[in-house]
Image 1: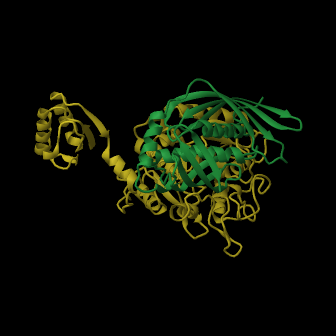
Image 2 (image 1 turned 45 degrees about the horizontal axis):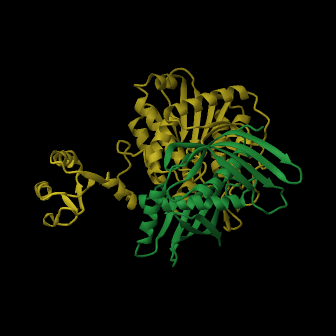
Length: 384
Length: 210
């Protein structure tokens, strides 16, 4: 729907406009009634979308000039009012991947995804969070007689980085929608299994929806309930507690009382440890900053396969840039960002997983953690 | 010489961009750091560390518009509590925003009641169009706070405007009382800050802390 601004110049134009309004039953915003339309005075009309062309053609035909005051009325309405979260958003066919979803919807989405793609997708239990919620990952695996290597991807280790779980969901959707038609994806699945954990820090993610949007850590309680949360990405057993951390619960980078002290960390670590000889690549998705980060954060000493790690990452960054021109920087965390120990990415590499990367998605700080939902699609498309 | 992606270069660049935005920004013009072209660090005995930077900035409202910039950031030695010294030169002219600035100014002046708003952007990242200049003004003004409080070990970004209240004035200036949240990248902390912002289309932005 559009709102047009017209200043009729002659009596004839006024008559034509009145005729148009009456016959098409157009919504007059100013003045309120057709009989009040006057030459030389502002006229604002809302034209429903299906009639926009007809009305503009008619105006042009009668040499009546107009300006588009509001190009999209719905957009303005949506922006001025928060949209109701309806309960009808569970079905993947109707699932809106360009919106952020609360955890309850993501749980249901996982079940639906398994149900509608049961030949390829199975949901597996990983463990429980501090607040006793169930952690599940999705396994995307094409039946085959040959043993396949695994690519693991987790999202949402930090609660406030909402674009990250949004990407995991998008990724799954893209693979499932295109594996039959896209030769690259189908070849991929012939040789590799994909394991996707859409939200690692479930308690934290829910807390960021309900209580504090910019929460980062999990929700484990310390000091008799006086302080909450360990930074899960400082809690892994990779040079744990040495650098870039705090030993104080009140800090955002509190590494916990010990390595793998958190149930969420243990759930992931135990699983990956068990499967490590089959895991080719470990990916962990964060925001923001636009980086592809390689090991290590705890030291500037390069990993043994640094050249290969960098080469692959640079190719990824350049492919990403090819889509929308978005610029990602590549390199080890210790040089690009800061020193940190206990990260999941470092740990994965240290236990022998050759390709281990942290992705920091859009943007570079303009919106930061509050990335608008209209950027979900381009962010996810370029990252695919 | 530093790699442009090294964190000390990107921290100095972020500071320079914030300062620059404060000096040259308005409710219709925000400047953000797009990238670092070159970076060099000079250690000056008894004074501090000076970073020589070549930066690429983008206009937040017209993302394809970029401007080159050279900047020098001098962080004083640790014991001094003064703000880093920033000098910069922009290549070419910035987009003229007088019309948009005046339109915003007049719109606020003609409000029946003082403007009040919260959570910009909201949780989903949305900013209502009418509040975009208010958001941008916060972005510009926060450049002042970032400049005053940065060290080589910090990198601040404005995360959200928690609350803004217009303050009635008898003179021609517009005044806003902002409660903003900063994200500090190294500690990952979210830091609230209160600032009073004065603005007039011809007189630029002025910030006082509370």
